[in-house]
Length: 255
Image (cartoon, rainbow, N blue to C red):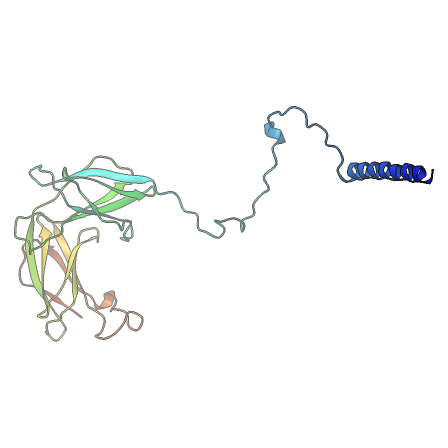
């Protein structure tokens, strides 16, 4: 009899424990309600994007400039209408500063595309690389000024040129080496330039049928670095105006 009571008591304890476990699960893990059928989110229900302040984000603090998307296309030929390949093409802004740094060359048909630029006008320099000193009658450099960015089918004719030579001397009449001699056109744009040799002599190749201003820019003192001593300013330059292609024995005298 005693063993029967023990069996009943044990069974009751087992049932009680099972019920308590169920109660605990209901409290700890409440049943989920069905979310219902899915539907697309309406535009006015989308989460609002918070305003981003001026100093927040990956571009914070960067300068915002207009996009440079305009290019200039065209072709280069000689005075006889033949296409000229391998002509270097570079662009400058109104201040004379370079706008392009990559090397652009005309292709086998003389065609080119230079840019991109912001809206505005630019000047484009067309210049030739030479393996030997040029001879009279060869093609010379040229500048086309005030071209509107975005211009298409610009036709450029390289002029014939002639050798132009001279020497640079100081106020005492002594030859000066390493003077940068540049040729400026009527707009003040630099067309070409070369440094004087050990005897102060220089030779430029200029287009015919135009006049140029030659400017001699002396170098910094020997042994001076750019941080220590800057090259002399314009007040120390030599100038010679009205120079035409083919002139010889020109004299640039430094002040």
